[in-house]
Amino acid sequence: SFCYVKYNNLYLMACTKRNSNATTLFLFLYHIINVFKEYFRELEEESIRDNFVVIYELLDEMMDWGYPQITDQKILSEYIMQESHKIAGIAKAPPAVTGQISWRSEGIKYRKNEIFLDVVESINILVASNG
Image (cartoon, rainbow, N blue to C red; front, top):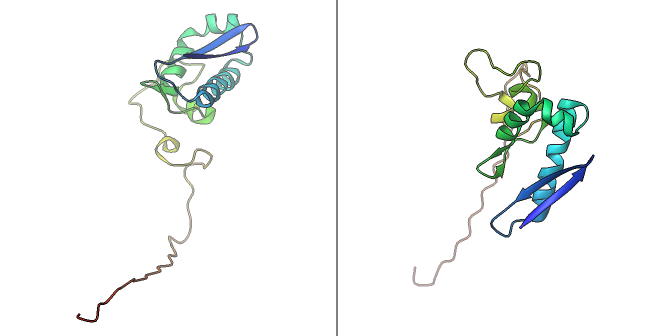
């Protein structure tokens, strides 16, 4: 089966061999459109032709083995920059990728390292008359 989205005379299509969740496919296609619009100002045939290498790198980071991975434009901009297609030195994963939340900036420091926990213990027991 397949799903497609039409945007500016372009068709973005997702194919699947299995009966996948259509909502997930459409959501991923719309995330692709939003990321491309952030990188290229406008998504059209000419922008795809001119930036094929960047699009290939974006799709490689956004999907692994057919599963959507990183679709946040802020995190992708740490990996792939439109001005330079090569990453100098050893590439390391940005802290936002390894964390659970993408909206929190890195390097936040607090004066005290404290944590407060509430520990609640309960025991259910059943005792017979013979012990």
